[in-house]
Picture (cartoon, rainbow, N blue to C red):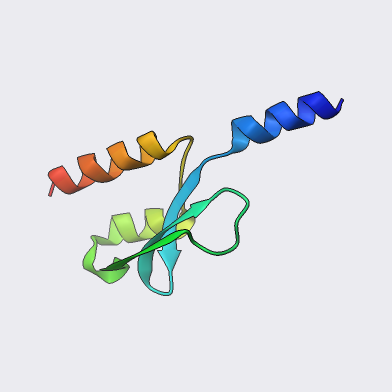
Length: 76
């Protein structure tokens, strides 16, 4: 039974992109404090994107997170 819990924990590990003190930030799953806070105010984003970030966007790997940020920034 413990092995199943360990496997489930590994599969659930990832990153969350959201808002911290008004700025865009990244958390590792299970952490209360962000691992990175970007000096970019969420108020500079379109309202739709602000709402998405307030809910949080989950990524399964750092690669997925980087790809999303690169794609998002290149679309501007």
